[in-house]
Structure formats: C-alpha cells, structure tokens
Length: 341
Image 1 (cartoon, rainbow, N blue to C red):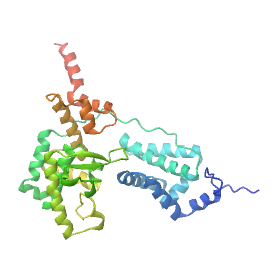
Image 2: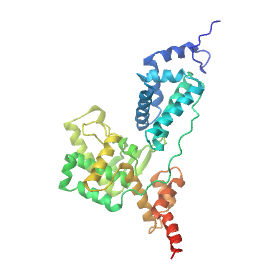
Image 3: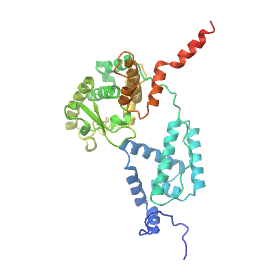
C-alpha cells in the first residue's frame, strides 16, 4: 500500500477515515470554522484576547490567514514546533513585553496546538515554559481621596470636557461598579441587561477562570448609579439603536458594546483631568486595599471576607495586597536603620 507522506495522523475513531482530517486541513473555510468553534468554548472576553494574540502570531509567521497559520503549525514536527515557540518567546521579550503578556501569547500558541491535537492533525505538544511572572508589583491602586475626586469631577460642569452627558453618566457608573464591587475590566464590559437582578439589587457576573455565573449584591451607591444609567441607556437606545448593543449594559461612543480598550482609555482620560493616574484594574486594586484598611477598625472584615469580595482563588494572592498595604519591607528597613543611630 502506498503511503501518503502529507496525510496527517489522527486519533479519531476508525469509522472516520484519516483523509477526512487531511481534507479539512486543506480547506480554508473548514479550518477557520473549526477554530472558531474551538474558541467558542471560552468566555467572550477570552475569545477576543486569543483572537488578537493569534493575529499577532500570524503576522510574525508571515501567513496570509488563520488557516495558513494553523496549516503551518500542523506541518511541523515536535522539534521545529518547540523551536518556533522559543523564537516567538524571544521575539516578544525583545519587544519588551511584560512577562504576563509574553505568557498570554505563548498560551495562545499552545491552545492552537491543543486544537490541532484535538482534530488529530498533530501528536506533539509545546514544551516551552512560561516566563515567571512578577508578583511583587504595586497593588495599592489610587487613594480613596483620588476616587472621590474623580466622582466629584464627573458630577461637575467641567466634566463636559470628556464627553456628552450620557457618556459622563455611564463613566460614573463604571467607576462606582469597578470600585464598589472590585470588578475586573473584563467582568464589567461583559455585563448585559439580563445580568441585572430585578430592582437592580444585584448583578450576575462570570468571574475570571469560572464557567458559572455568580451573584453580587449591590451596595446603595452602586444601585443609585446603575438605576440612573439604566434610565439614560433606555432613552439613548431609542435614539440611536444598534443591534449589537441592545443587550450590552455599557456602550461605546459609536453605539457598539463597550470594549476593553475604550474603557481603559476613558478611565485614563478621567485621571488626566484630575491630575492622577487611573486605570480600570487600579480601581479594583484600590477596592481591595481599602478593604484591608477597613479591616483595621471593623472586626467583621477579615481575610476570609476580603477573599470572598475580591474573588481571588488563592488567599496567597491577597497577602501580596496586604504586604503592599502594610509596607512590611519598610518596617523592617526602618528597624535596621535605627541600629545605625
């Protein structure tokens, strides 16, 4: 029997001929469709992140399409695939990307290989390790006074510098939700009108690394801000309805659903107006930091309660916040410095 060297191996049941996979790999439409289905198993925000990362990989490899990129990966053996991964990692390092960003792009490559393994196109894996992420970063976020100043600015006439009335109202709601609930950027932009409980007493979110939704009760200020925004949003959609935005809770300036880049830009611009550094995740950092501050005077607030609020899977992560908040290193340094007197 003549063997075809280009026929890809497969682990599918014997009832499905190996040539079926080969033909699918040769079909641009089929490969891209299978890849889309593979990504759909993840949350929308993760899909967007992987799509952008895969596009960067496609450009790096100089391929014309998604299918060409996947076909190129499928044509490699284990040694050359891992060499490619190493070169990709080095290229990202040379571009001065943060360790977390490098690991994200490596994760995308590994997911593409996992997809190819799933359809029986390859039998190897990527063995290149991720970079060690920097854990001792500044997690304090902006001060409580800065956050109050930002909200006061949004309620002042000067706020017209950053947008129309509805944009200002929406931005205030976003700032309040990000801080009051300690939300992540991806969690807040993924909110839809269906995620709001009757009477706006709570919202339902899909947290990082979780499949099931969880209910977060809204404190009074968050409820008030959300009620005002919902009323304005209803009026806005009757004027400029956009099919993709009918369910999305927050909107871009063009009427499309709010995306991560636009949220980051709006929060950063707000910070510039008050002479401070603001970013979405910084508001989450500030919320957790203030929770530790509250724990000093409120016996009902402890590490377990703060972990439930922050929704961190590991308490160890919270200890980084606590160490940065208490500045234990400075205490030790000061103690040693006193020995010099």
